[in-house]
Image (tube, rainbow, N blue to C red; front, top):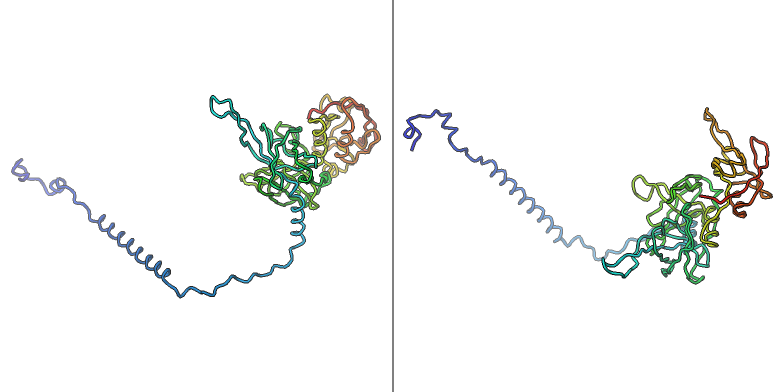
Length: 398
């Protein structure tokens, strides 16, 4: 049947073309066929090469033996020193696992202890006292301590000083299992000095990283949001779980406790910080004696010894005076800048009663002998001239 017979109309060639159904292009079939051929060729060539290599037997040597080992010679003095420090101090580092109480089921009254977090700690003495960061045990209901020989002991909290991120635990382990750490000083540290960080993040074995003292007199924020001053900065890598572990000098002495890390990349190779051992050595005995820290205070903030030395000052240089404090009432002068940005040196404390003060550490050690309410005579230097000032100590609030 044609268009002409139906309608009496003869369409033009163009209209006839539009009315016809389009033909399927053969290009798709050709392209698919080409791809199929290429895939088959690849399989044939690859398979042939595979069976060629697998089937060869002339590549084997039945007389093959291990390569001869090249002697390396003696370890360097630095390597030997590092190994000695690690071997001497690794028994002093412990692993701490904290536990929390959780309800077992919605209606169950049974309570079981489950792990909350981990950290490291330091064997302080053979009586079983373990020093760590407060933030390691902050939210725990209980804790366990694993010693270097992998024995595990239940720990009791002796006391904590959150403002300085310091806590003391106690375990009832025999003295033969406890290796107390050698204590050094931190007020005399120098930038560039070699340091080592040891931790026990997994309870299996100790880890060691090394670096240098990058800076001293740094300040970080404690868990109570109060500043921790005179913190040691180091580039020694502090890995997760190493909080509470020791920072050592090249003699293997404790100079700080690793407490925090700043790492823009999120790794453990950023900027590490450690609580100075001078602070630890003041706080820990007080916690052991009474479970708390009660310090007499003048109401001043003291500059680091390094800063005082840079400014050419001896003694304990006053950086700021707390409003309403005994120091403020006595008229002590703080270090400040004038409108032109020049530094105006404040008072430097060079003695308390009959005790000579040559550093900030001397001042803190002497104050620990007194108690709140005691009246003392401060020997100070103001504008190069010696003066005596009487002050009544109060209980420290930070």
